[in-house]
Image (cartoon, rainbow, N blue to C red; front, side, top):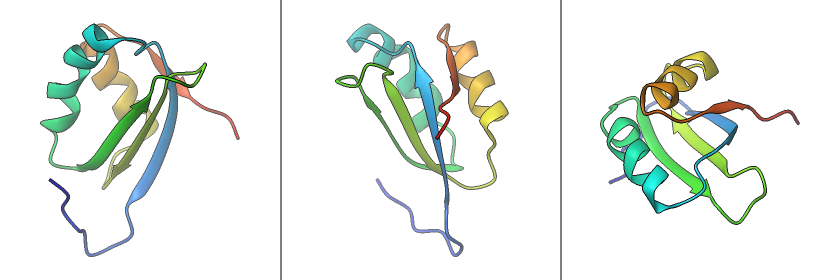
Length: 79
């Protein structure tokens, strides 16, 4: 489900170790359960397993802690 915020959402792009379906099953409830996250996806075809998040009021540090809590790893992807 996509919610439409009143302001433009923040887009966070991270390098992760979310490389397979087992990892997706770990992280999906965490990310989908946070109402500040509007949309998210993981590009497992990319060498960096890029996690892209459209959100409101979240920082890279917030996402890092969410992913770490799920037993996974991420870092901000440099430009």
